[in-house]
Length: 317
Image 1 (cartoon, rainbow, N blue to C red):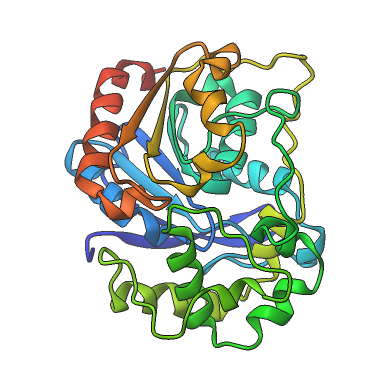
Image 2: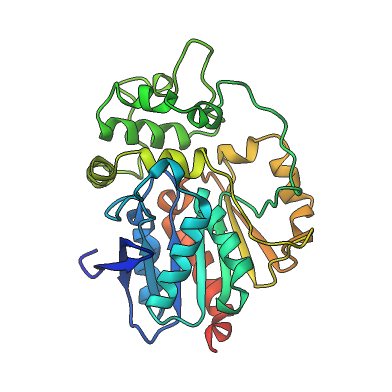
């Protein structure tokens, strides 16, 4: 961990934090985090790809971790995040890059890949497949579904404010590590779904939690609730059937609650996703949860390295 360097880049009027490891002359890999995460979620993968001869770069999105928040977090958009990633890649003078993303980071990665295909050597996503607006019609979930609750202005803020920041992050990690979709009862808030003495998942230490807690203490949750929960992904793409032509791998934990969203498993399993990503390969990790890259880093790292080495030639201009 002490080999990972940290610096700030002035990007689109903000000072954004990036963590990186590996030679600047090596093929570049940019990692995009989800929620409730920061760059640190990719610690195992960054070290592995750097040791394999790649350059690993993991930014904190604007308003997350050590990065500056936007002036008006409630007006932040996915387009802002996509533009930031494009600007980071340009600022670091990277001509072609591998993109690895998870959770809502995939909702930044896919528009980035579609808008800048000439910059892309390959893409790996965890937890979420490519779903253009017309591609996937999910069945309505109950009112207590956490996304529905957090989309409501003020609801999550009131819920979270009853606890210290570290406890909020702890509870979300515990909830999202389970195999059932987090859905609260009618007279229950999302935080109430976790009993006070519930243990952390075995693969997440108190030291890990302290790092997440300290950085969310700094950033707060204003931007994190806006993106991804209160904004909508914009592909910035006009074709009716947008296609990602770059090689792609989708990594899914077999016990990830996201696969239980009605219609999701069928969309991936039946190959409908190939309509949009012809060159996709899907890999399942047995017993893997929503944080499969932290839970089973060795297995995920092996999948990532196999993909990177197989497509390394595409990183050359």
